[in-house]
Figure 1 (cartoon, helix red, strand yellow):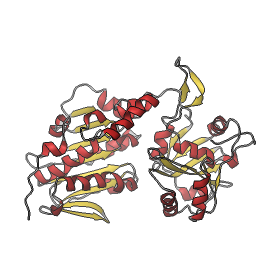
Figure 2 (cartoon, rainbow, N blue to C red):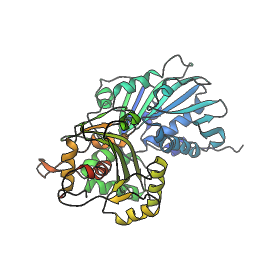
Figure 3 (spheres, helix red, strand yellow):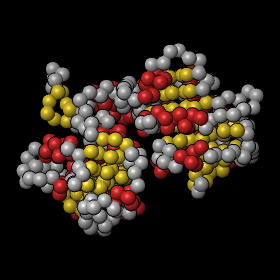
Length: 415
């Protein structure tokens, strides 16, 4: 084998010294995009699993399907960055990483299958570490407590048990703030804020994205740029709750109908597919699935809709994109059409939806993030106006498109 000599300091970079050296129970890192919090976490785990021969890692997100393109990819990147790929076995079925010299493993689980989270038995050593990525998605503190309790039992001398949470802090009312950031000083808690200014590996184009955000969208810059808590006042929708409902049972409700809406994204905005069931008799909307990805071509959108099983469904899409709608029809999404246009589109749609109870399946994490941050805009004096912010609205716009056939009247639009 060829020996490689690396400077860990050069690979990891600066500004994460406390994070790297902390051995208490909880490392809690809120931060902006591009703050390198996830990449630093991935580098730490690969490095330290190789340093601690009895340590194993459990990586968790709220939904299992999001792990492959996030944490799994970050950890594979870290293996390559550290030039130790010959020592690691990578498998996708099951999703797992194994350190070949010792048999230590990195396991991946979603909260949508709680039995698999709580029933892990390791082959070597003990389950000592847990990484919860996008911890903001976990709305219920009790779910975190269940995860926390899975890291238990005796560990080898010199080893330590630890839970790491990384997330974007969209909402100041989240339980994570009170539990970790507002807590009294505790040697077992490291709660820190990171942002893109701490990432020396960003180039001029990366930094320009944040400078533009700072100028055009100060509210988003506060969170996505500086890593500060999002201040949420004047929510547009408060008529929602999370529930792990059974879709097949919902489908059997008398008179219930399906509805699908698509909002097209751009380079830095996601394309969003909203999937719901509408019970007009009982005034309930069930949100059961979603697509939410940036940088998607029409071909990628078509492929994803097909993979999700919704190729033949009636989909109402943003009518500002007629070429994209035509292209999706050519690609086999034959029942897609543009949403109608007219006057007072957004507010009429909002008025209709506010009369319903919105029940959100736990897998729809991006919809939950949007609906818990979608607020009424303010004028220059700080007074709320009768217009929502132009942010956190990709799936919410898609929902309005989807519901057009249920909304009465002809003089409305879905721009």
